[in-house]
Image (cartoon, rainbow, N blue to C red; front, side, top):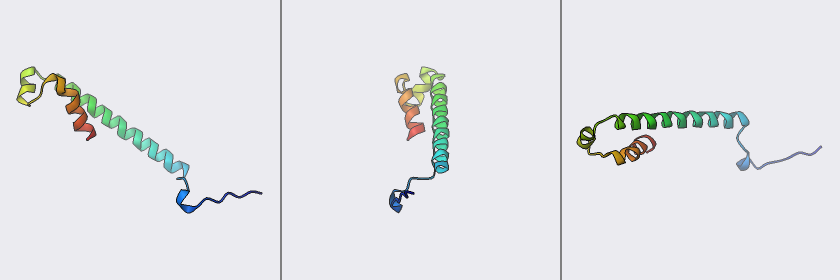
Length: 71
């Protein structure tokens, strides 16, 4: 019978822990994407004058949404 011995520093996390981490990462990414799309939709619905009052132009909407959600 063969035994495999791994050093304690290189022991991979247990499968349930990795699955849990993957699920939580997926949920976080999905929530961020939802907020990104919502921010884009709300800013896009504003008039050019309203965007100007905020110091924005239409070409900046995606960058503003990305910075608001992912940074």
